[in-house]
Image 1 (cartoon, rainbow, N blue to C red):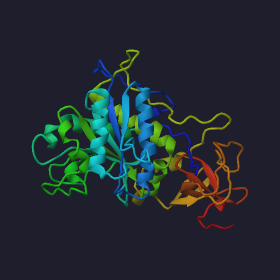
Image 2 (image 1 turned 90 degrees about the horizontal axis):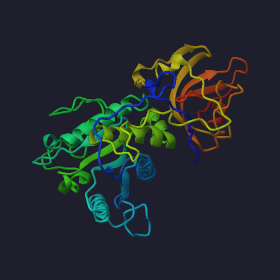
Image 3 (image 1 turned 30 degrees about the vertical axis):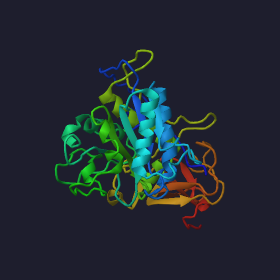
Image 4 (image 1 turned 45 degrees about the horizontal axis):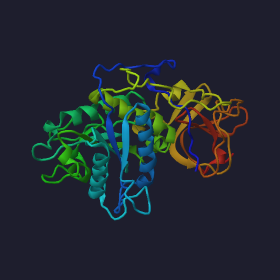
Amino acid sequence: MTLEILSIRFANHGKGKKKIMAVTNTRTKPLLVAVGMGHRNTRKGGAYEEYGWTPGASRALQRRGRARDMIVELIQENDNDSDQNFSNGLDIGPAYAKGVAGIIAKHGRAPDVIITMHYNGGGAAGAHFIHVDGWAAPQRKGDNPKDVSTVREISKALGLTGTVALMKPTWSGGSDIQAGVMSERQTGAVANTPGNRLAEMVYGDKYQSTTTRLIAEAGSIGVAREAAYIRDARWVEFTYCECLLNGVEKVWGIFRKDGSTALAPDPDPTPIAQGFERPVKLPELENFREAPPSFIPRAVQTTEGWAFYIGEDVIITEKTPRYQTFLGTGRVGEDLEPGTPIFAAWGLLDKTSGVPYTYTLWGTRVNLLHTDLGVTT
């Protein structure tokens, strides 16, 4: 199934200028990073379709890390069973431990950083990044300042993109105050209950002195606005994964074969394919792109007429183009095929034809008559 994949600019880019951040702490050898495919184990679990998403997201992070001259290995994958993307016969902790042990055997050292890839379910919006916080030394939050610093930097980097929200810090009890940063104790699985731990943390405890461990939750698949990003393979690789790695390098330092001391630039992460045009945004609607649903008005007047908020996932029912301006000449990508899910943010009527169309999060226009939303003329 082909998803709607378009150009997403970072919110702080201005008019497409690249922003390059220098990092003063450099390294003499490459970072060794382990990436866990969340839920790729016997018990599966996770949010809706999550265990089918984590392999692609993990490989995307591996590609971006290797592009930065890191050594990036996947865990919960190559365990010599019949499915090379699934740890059959192992629960999450043993699968995690076996993968890390394989990295140590191969490279002669523990990973510097272990990141396990996930997304959340339910209606609680916001990406968040979970750091170690056990109940006894040396596994408590205070014993692992590098872990906390890393998730803080990742959260900052993702917040600047203006894409998915960051989970608000509404928890209590020794809580972090930065949006998107979560203690292991504050997760639903642990529920601040003494003695409870996350398996992905416990099975990495032996590497506490050398390794930062974190769980990356990309947002909620249950929030349509965030699901649109989570399902966009280019957003995952060129926006989300780059933010993860920028946060890691801000804390752990940079190694580049060419001696560079700068983080990867904030690029235009998904350049438009040759022969297509960039979307034309409606600033009146862009003002509400990251607003919580309760703050989004029912209708907004724009230069293309009144826009009415839809805020739902819809499915394409027949092959249909994506336009810069509805029924205009500027197409922004390949036509959408039947069965493709898109997020219909706003609905408008074409002034000439009266045909209803949706304005998506990416500023593209799609004919609503070619979706399952249930509109008629």
